[in-house]
Length: 506
Image (tube, rainbow, N blue to C red):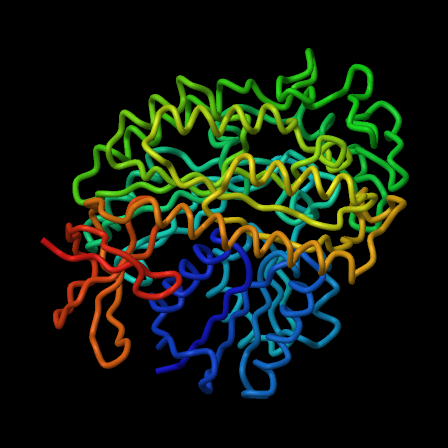
């Protein structure tokens, strides 16, 4: 039996796609082995969200080649997509699979084995209407929590981000296909579903309606800064391409062609979507998933704050399987920086969304992402961000140092922040995040909670089983059993380690 090994870099969407590719290989008769073992085929699902991600992607491809020079090396995903189809000429891989092409993995391996020459399956995902890629999984990797991809692509074009060019425009998975996969996962024993997507808040777009207008009026530019033919957006200096403007660098909409006002409402005549449409379609899908027997928890991936309204949050709170754990992308706690980032909200609106969630749920876990050292970020702007983060009081924060991405508007902005300054600001926010996280977790001491167990571990000679509450607080119970994927109830009594709380089981 031939052996295959896979390695995933990047986000939850990538993790889902890697699992789907693994199951395609298993169905084709491959034995899956660990990546450090010798294999006949190595598949690296690459990432391009930062320059570091690009470098790690190349490193893993070279590592696979060193482990077995005779193996077939497959480079898939976002790094491949942004680098372009000629990346195969570098000799780092035998098969190049761009985004929206991963479902062809097995047939491309077979083609390479016939031709013994580099095989490329790549297309420009920013040109023309793209269908949602037909990838699926039938079981969870850990048999407890399963990622479930329901959406791909992004139409936001934040000034720092390369992902819209790597993933293309928004497209959504049909509800019936989602439900079929949820039922398969439930039948395999999976208890928790995590809905994921590149821009989950846009679920419902790109499913039935034609998006020619979106393609013509709201696309961006190539990674070298040149506009896509017929799909212009912004030059690297921030000026709009003729007839296709979006936002100036100060965040104000270009006349007649804006995507969104800064308060999140769509600009008249040129909105990318009706903000109530995706919200309702996501809710409808959640209601359908909620009815599937066997699934006891539904967790949402990253959301844009604009999707949170009181009716939306109340509808979520009315579904007992929904986990009170919400990741709202912030990026900066300073309005002037948010404008330069081309984010679609200000801090007052973001804070209001968090208050809505806290009014509808009992102490929901609210987490976020923050970029430090964005071009032009002054000490005063950073101080405003820190103050806002403390005001909102997040459960967890993912802190990123700004990374220049070729082809994005931010790469050409003045005021690039020095790396030592970024590092110092990052360290401050990491320390703040640890303190706020500990305070949030401590609030559950003495309370009764349900925990979905995942794995055993031993600490100081004593055996425990660990899992998570619906709020994603990690908890352990003393146990000599093996009850992964079982829900247990008990009282949280206090710290076991810095990040794990002890629960006395009933």
